[in-house]
Figure 1 (cartoon, rainbow, N blue to C red):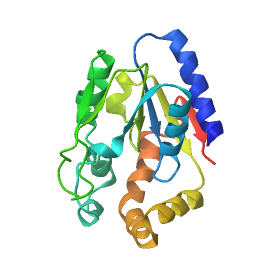
Figure 2 (tube, rainbow, N blue to C red; figure 1 turned 90 degrees about the horizontal axis):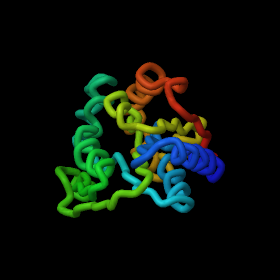
Figure 3 (cartoon, helix red, strand yellow; figure 1 turned 180 degrees about the horizontal axis):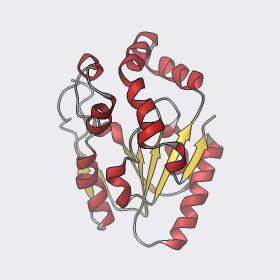
Length: 196
């Protein structure tokens, strides 16, 4: 994954010489591809604001989401409007940003904990669907992170356990496939990197 991070950093450095203001980078890709690991490697090399899009999960249990269409899941699972309003817009305006992440402890509502970020030259949005079309006007670089399906599944099993992995794939695979094949196919990204 260091090579993937190196590739993204190189492109960011090029963009810094071409554009002014905050550069917004979306690290997109299916769950388990290694987006967060790559984002952390990038943050070790350059000063960034690293935002986990999972902080903006709207809530709801898998049985609810499993009954929804792929398009509904893509459009509604992450509150991209809050990301835009609470993170992107203030940081691009040179102001601090603050947001309450989803409360993963209670799996309901927002955490009382506030995350804050001071403006930096680079903002990384880390999460599936982060390069969505509704944010294209504020994105400077859309990066697709890829790896083999077996690797992805193995990482999810290692992270969450086999039972959760099976339930997750039954719920979310159709949305992932639809998004990365139809809504945001590989050729629509600015850069594609392979995680290891």
